[in-house]
Image 1 (cartoon, one colour):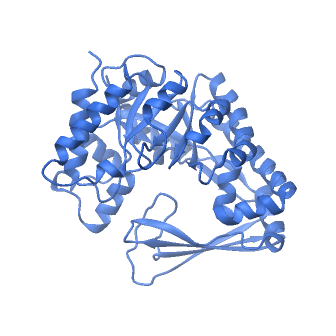
Image 2 (cartoon, helix red, strand yellow):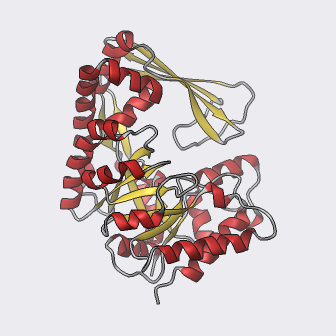
Image 3 (cartoon, helix red, strand yellow):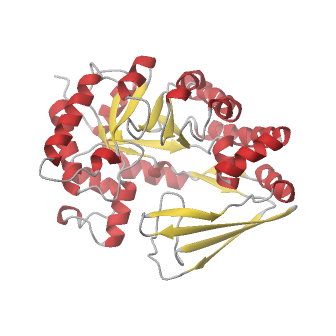
Length: 386
């Protein structure tokens, strides 16, 4: 089977030749490329997809599915950069730093100005928000509402064409939707401030959520029939420590249920990215119509074992199995430990159908290349169906 055939067969609940091996190595690649620490075997690779092809993995690419562009009408965004001497990447998971390792953003709206700052931290290989857009509820609320009402999400046909061509028959593209209202609030104000805003201004926050929900569904309606796209993903960080069941029910469930109806009517699939503890959200995952929690982290990082996910409902696609806990194993027995981990994990899932062997949230930039190869070899050894 090609990687594409293997993954699509898995999504439908069929029996592929083997379990798809779909590590998320985007951050791993870019950080090691920036640091000059890519292994010799990968020195000629210019992208994560090339790495996956080189090591014989399948491709499940969310970053090739970044094809929705926020279009502003009356608002105006300006970007500037500073450089404090730190490492300056061209690409990260969330934004870019072409002119320096500090990115300053200013949004002018008819009802006020919002500012926002990112800083790339070389030690972690990731950007962090050092200033959120929404700092004071009453002062910034008119500008935030003006922004949400002004913005539309439009398809960039060239971006999705390039993404599909880049992945080809080696896998699938996970088309990235706008975030749910709760995640949007986290991006605007941060999780802590969002919690206070919802508690103190419930009606105003509910109104903003409905505005963003309608914009998101309009974007989905534009792209849901795209040829070559079989899965759509909410770019969340599902974790019950931040997405409490009450917050999920009020600010994620309404838009997810409506989106699921549209996506399932086309015979396609709805994913959401996960980053932590999920057991408390399990009933809501089913109620939302989610088909897959992408990147699930098992204990000790998460609190929901993969076989428990499988037992919740036979239609759920289980996705995970490689967390930083195993990725960073070192020592003379690391390869043997990885093989045992994969063997026992695959055995716990029964017949292994509807299982995508993937990174638990992400792949650590500190993962030794030998461990990535060990995961691949173990997947080939223990993941065959014949």
